[in-house]
Image (cartoon, rainbow, N blue to C red):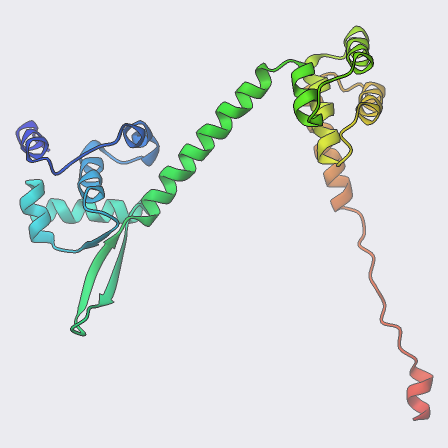
Length: 225
């Protein structure tokens, strides 16, 4: 797209790009011109009547270019075209942006989760424990945590043990202490070691032969009838 046409589009006010969508642009894996056309559609709402001539006129592009944009957006699963019968029983084509909304929402949720995980990683062991146990640690509990640290359990390993206790539904210090002891016996010294151990355990469980329930049927009784 030439800059002159881009300037015309901006001046026309047909395109508004929210900052949060602009930040997600690289993840959409489309070129800038197609992105601008997508934003042009975005400005028209979720259900847009397919009118290629109007699109061409308002977006300052020829029909062939508009069809190219439409093809790319469909291929990338950012838009969907549906044929719907109107009130006059005439079939009409509409463009829906649900796929685009879902993709943007998933990206944003993923970023929020990533930021949350980073914040959790910044917390010290005492903060993590108080959050997971939903209470303030007592002086005795604080001493137990200090003892873990003095026993050369890293904060990373202690946090993983806390996570393990929560997953298993037993979030208390005695159980966490047992987890740390068992991991130390196995030589698990960091998060990577723990993840490998978890994976090995899952694989072992999945490879166990499944018990087959036999149907208890009295064949003799059946013959007697």
